[in-house]
Image (cartoon, rainbow, N blue to C red):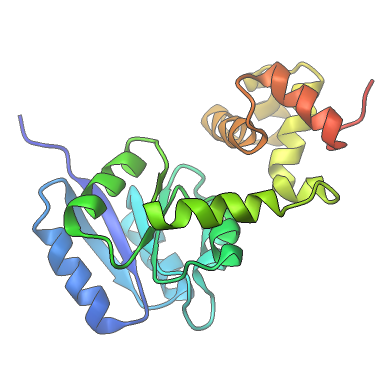
Length: 216
């Protein structure tokens, strides 16, 4: 039986780095690079055409940057796994990427084996952070106040959350919002992750405390 290869698109505006990364990934049997792009707008076209399972993105790029690209991709393809690969350890970039929906945040000085392991974790539905950014992420989160709790969730996630509060099933939510059941499940997973809740009931309870939904 042949080994599964995860289809991957690389997005970075530095051509030499991007080509070097593509060459490195070509040596990893678990991945197949199906496209590359130099900025966010080009990436949207390449990803739409090649339909990869993973997008590997830089944060700082001209035009549409990595975080704006993540937001755009999440609006279009919620199931795409997204890994940021960057030199930035700025709290704003870290938290912005996570809030936008990135599944991993890895620094460019990461060694090949660690990059492979991080990509595999992301491909399999887990998260991945470089050890160096764990502290800054936690610090940025600790400085985030609850004065604007709605920023925790996207508009669509808030809609799904409201449906959960009404006790609707996954199918009922899908029918009301005109989206697929799988998309609903993805939104619910993101809601649970962002609210650090273990189930739907706990998520609704926490959301009520934060003022994201009204009691009754």
